[in-house]
Amino acid sequence: MNALGNHILVEFSGCTPQIMNEVSTIEQGMVDAAIKAGATVINSTFHHFSPYGVSGVVVIQESHLAIHTWPEYGYAAVDLFTCGDIDAWVSFDYLKEVFQAKNYSAVEMRRGSLSLLDRMDFDLTTMREEAKGRRNPDFYTRNVWFTDKDDNQALSLRYTGEVFHDVQSPYQRVKILESYKYGKMLALDDMVMTTEKDEFHYHEMISHPAMFTHGNVKNVLVIGGGDGGTVRQILRHEGVEKVTMVEIDGEVIEACKKHLPNIAASFDDPKLELIVGDGIAFAANAKAESYDLILVDGSDPVGPAEGLFSVEFFNNCAKALKPGGILLTQGESPKFNEKAFAELHHTLADIFGKDHTYTSLFFVPTYPTGMWSFQWGVKGDANPKKITNDDEIEAFVEKQGLRYYNADVHRGSFATPGFVKDLLK
Ligand code: SPD
Image (cartoon, rainbow, N blue to C red; front, side, top):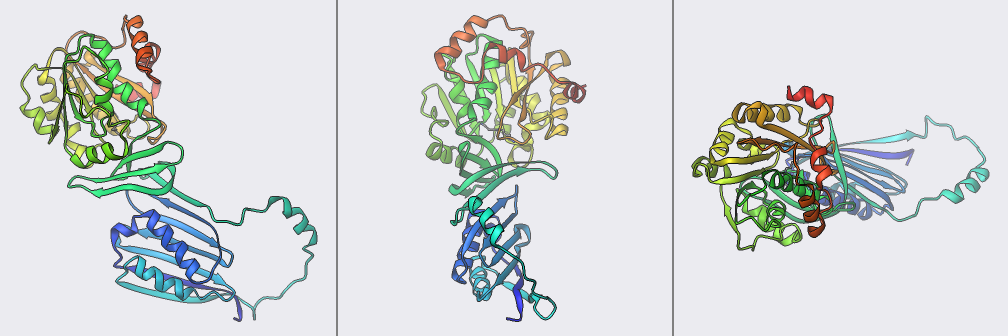
């Protein structure tokens, strides 16, 4: 070859969109494509973007293979840059099959034309000696990332590439992945919902503060909450007589029962009535003044959960609450979804009255920005900021082995930073 390297710039189109969004399939395909061409793989780094798109590089001893995908266009831009005797067309042929590309084109160019370069002599001895102590291990490390993001911010979790469950339900894409730091996690439409290791932050805070504010909850309605974590916490309270849970997507329940059994641990509880159905319609038809507590444990306001942020839905929930009842809903993040956060607060303030509307903040390390909220509407005079039952709370915390909630955290969760106060004005 009269050049240092060979660069093939490939356009794959008409590819299967699902494959273009499958980071582990793409990574494996790229690594195998390198190996099939006779290259030595040093390292691979791949990243999945939410809701779709994958970027990654396989570094080989003979240069690199790189890819960027646009699943929504069934398109992948691939670079096959090799040097030495590697025939990257072997990689090209292989990837064409893996991606099920209907159309493809490629431009090949030589890089580093030897007729234009002069070789220079230089002494490597000292550099080699210095480098001995800092050699990288000569095996390739998988580096696959899951990203939950909007246009400007993201939260990424490194995961093993292992996808235990991946089903497109009639409502959303239901995935269970294995993250390194937080264990198995549930993602809906590529947004993190819960993980084995931090689920207690969210599930303790959606349930116990309202339970201890009310003080005598017997009949609970949970809308959403398909992973089962919320009903599990509610059912820790002995005074609860009945929990009705309405989850629209049975696929979420099944996936969590199978792969997250410690969270989905209470679906067989005799106090639970589990309804796989539309929570919005359920609230519209609910008997007036029948629940002490309504918890809305939905996902973000896109896709099937959008209606869980509407005025009509909250009006129906308010009607279904008994006097003195409490509504608490997943309130989004004041740092990530400022608009949804503020609008939700104002919707509840219009329905319940400004003085009966509260916002609690808590920390979830696996949600973008980490700062998340629950928003409250109280049908009566209970004030969650003014609890007096600390002893009862601490005894419960101790007995149940809670790890996030306690009386101090209860009060502290209502402390609002200035920028949050501004959003709530
Ligand atoms: N962006 C994440 C919002 C998630 C709300 N629901 C989580 C479900 C946990 N039961």
